[in-house]
Image (cartoon, rainbow, N blue to C red):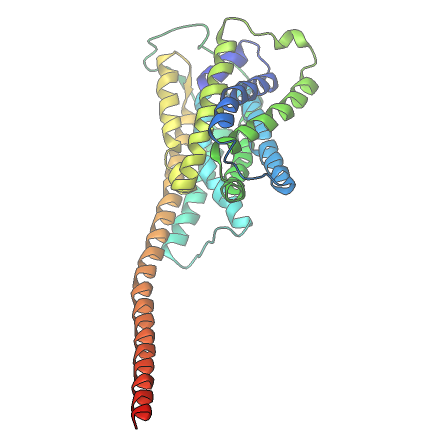
Length: 345
């Protein structure tokens, strides 16, 4: 995703126009499937739930993708993938503010979470303020489509990094509220399609405001069309649906564990396609991954502690329930025996 986006933006495609096309393709891909598979059995959609989904799409898709797109325009695909590792930590930070998560400083898990947040902040600082030397590793497939030839000022680099990291907070909002909102409207395919459709309308308004020249909206048989179709169908369509499924089955922590793979795969592909990799992105990405897994380890340990505590409590409750039921049976039988003796006499 990051590679084809970067190639399209360097080829002259406006990021806001790209977001509109991406969401439009996603909607066209998902709408028929949602209609035939879930429409007949879907529950009614209340006005309040619709408004919540509208805001969720506005912040988590339209705003997040536009911020990420313009940030990618000023930086590189490797940095965009590296900054993605801050997403679980920003999500956890938002969950703390909203009191969905807790942070107990006196416990080992609380200290691990705090350490992870500090390490991630160091990674963010490395991404933002340290660009470092550029280097190429393998460079097997040189092509003008993929070779960005990035030569921008350090100010532009900081600006792009700020926009990219801001998109992480918007995505964090999307993850935190999507889990609870899915309980109000459980059909995942319709839920995803509705978000994409609303984001399409919102993105069109944003794109026509930012880029009023419709000649700049034209797509040819080049990397621009490839990026729109791939990101629309595979990322906004298929991947969003899979993410919704994973969130329901395993929760946001399990989903966040796969985030570092995006940075690793993007760095490898960037090297193979002769796109540059700078030392600041690598160092920042490593720090972000370290901070991420520190937080995830703490979350995993807390969940195990809760499960162990529940296992100790449940047998005691069952024994108490059995004891109370036994007392009731003994009392009833004693009363019946007394009544029988009275009646006999």
